[in-house]
Amino acid sequence: MTIGLEVHVQLKTESKMFCGCSTRYGAPPNTQVCPVCLGMPGVLPVMNKRAFELAVKTAIALGCTIARFTKFDRKSYYYPDLPKNYQISQYDMPLSHDGYLEIETSEGKKRIGIIRVHLEEDAGKLVHTGGGSSSVDLNRTGIPLMEIVSEPDIHSIEELHEYLSGLKLLLTYLDVSNCNMEEGNIRADANISVQMDVDGREISSPISEIKNMNSFSACEKAMAYEAKRLHKRIKQGVTTETHPKETRGWDDDRGVTVGQREKEEASDYRYFPDPDLAPVVVDDAWLESIRAEIPELPHLADYFEELVKETGDVRSSCVWVTQHVLRELNSRNLTIERFPVKPAQLAEAIALVLDGTTSTASVSGTVLPEMIDTGKSAQEIVKQKGLSQVSDAAALAAAVDAAIQKFPKEVDQFRAGKEGVINFLVGMVMKETRGKANPQMVRELLEKNLS
Image (cartoon, rainbow, N blue to C red; front, side, top):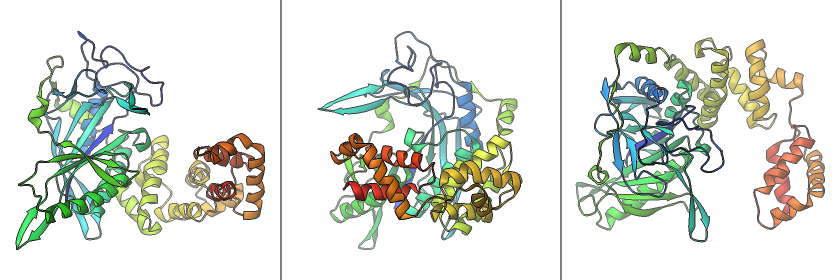
């Protein structure tokens, strides 16, 4: 398989890309909009300088060449979540080009080429309300979006996983994005094709662009599915010579890709320079001031790799480094070289979470900070502060039964099909046990008792 990725990253700014509206997540629909992001006639956009600097910062860290002269373009297309009927993006003169991200695979280190890093504005969000109708929330319209376009250098699901994990680690350490996938801070589109040997000749499938992948796990599942589908298509006589490119969406519930339309070419978008935005000139002084913000990066990668060796778990190691270690580094103004908790010590703390001894919240909120401050081991802190979880089935069963008796309305709602109510019941048990219950065991007991 051959995969190229387009990763869209919402940048960590207080205001939108071309206006002063807030970027705060979770506000009521259409309350963070203005004439500029609504595309009203006569309005003039103004570039967010900080968003530009964050994109340049990322591009430098990826080894890209920074353009000293760059501009913005209008990308024209029609969709309900795009009120202007064009998106401000960058076409032929992006702010950077020609970089790479180095990944570690089972076969050794490999560089994934970066074609370009450029800036654009996000579109709105369609909310499908059922009954054949949808609502449009334009709060997201105009949020600064950085697009990182890779070369088609990814040739396995393992390489895909390492690239996405490494990119998230980098973005988090640079502090350019919140990197919260549940809030849509990172979204990926992928272009995939496969190759087969047919009668001594290598045949390539048509290229599929896969959209709607809202998690790294979904991206990996979608690529695995699409590779199998394209292999079948080649066997049916469908090749890149007989069929055009196609855009497909990932249906996570069904685990399949669904055809949407033939893939557009650049000419379909009628790109032209935005007449309302001046080109941007990056001089030496500005570039060096941005470069000075970048922390030492290789040492963080070394720490992560050592942690993976200790835990044997890439996913949990990535979560702990990108979310918890980096939070402590940023809040304490530390570099990873001066971080007092060694990978082996952190692995011990993670093991206490994985085996159910204590919770993620206890380790990240209490144990890890105290390990940094005192040098004590995770086990010692958990014991001293009484942070062990209650995992005794009999004790938990009593707390679960009490919650079921106390909240009959929520119990009825769950049994009527509102499965999300179980989170409320888990929370009530956690509250009654002062956070010491093992939440996974609580959930399992609730599901068993309510089935």
